[in-house]
Image 1 (tube, rainbow, N blue to C red):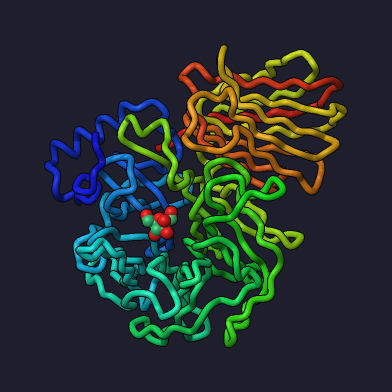
Image 2: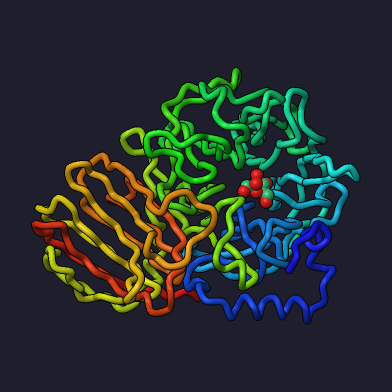
Length: 489
Ligand code: FRU
């Protein structure tokens, strides 16, 4: 299928029921459909949006182009969850049907105001000359659909280009705040701040002032929240060159921790840290759960990259939800505890990984959680292979002297294009003591040392790639394996 402009800018409402069903059927028949991750029923999913707890349920939307695996006309798709472990598909929530969002209902956030659920998002409009005009729009969500769309901010503020989007809103001490990802006219990325007394009239307050004045050409998807009495700012800078093993993916997603002066908007902060060290992570969004924990969900994909599922008419999924805390000046990310509800068939094994390739029992799975406790490590290099078939293997290597964990996709199966390099690695602060790994049909999320770091990647292996193996370069590692099959809904 040729994705020319006309095909990319078609709405879901412009195709027939039968055509839509055919797209869903094609998607359903694809290999690599996930068992317990949020994935589109057809077409392309990208950023999580509007994440919010309202009326006893979590609401989570995502950027959606229903008609194919390309970044076409963005709609919002709606899912809900009672527990953050299983999500129900609810259907189309935002159709790009006004002048403001005519060329895409772009990313935004959710908020409850006076007992009503609202979303605030960027309407992407193109003029006849194809000039981009970003509008910030508020809509109410009623029965899962956006109604009463109202434009609240008209175009970029002076000093910024038309890359001005992805509002995150919150309420604090009698004021509504909004942060937007922006590009200055000198083509550097930043975050701008607006406030409102009544959620209707919004006033430009200026930039969030950080020391990162020249750090990429655009910052997408900002998020700001307080955690353990500190301020955390998440954003996705585009245009960073790789340095010292950092910034390996096409675009980055990371955070600053510090303090924001609410009057001057100056932020004192530490270094920019990446949120994830795998191949596929971008545009995360957070909300508070019903008990006040900060929960993060990301897009398990990246812009400007082709994925093997494209040929089946769909692309991407979201990550599992993670609980955030600050420990030793860094964000820790742990899978939400409710995911334990998906566990079935516990199997455990205690034993040694040695130079010979060992298949420890339990040694296979398709959709599972595997916890590897490293009880004693006398091996300079320790290997854990997952999704193993005769020809395939997704390899994790832990180098003890360097404290470096490497994920290697060279023999994993099909890969996304054009991705630089076949491995990603991270140097840990402490010796490797635990891996908690969520393996789905086409993804792997590796939580290292109880949330010290995470590596998230899509893996497109064959159906036969179900094996689990361990070995060492020499010496031995004493391990405990705990494995659960995981079921989706
Ligand atoms: C990030 C992003 C956002 C934008 C959305 C459009 O992936 O580019 O900046 O709002 O995707 O789908």
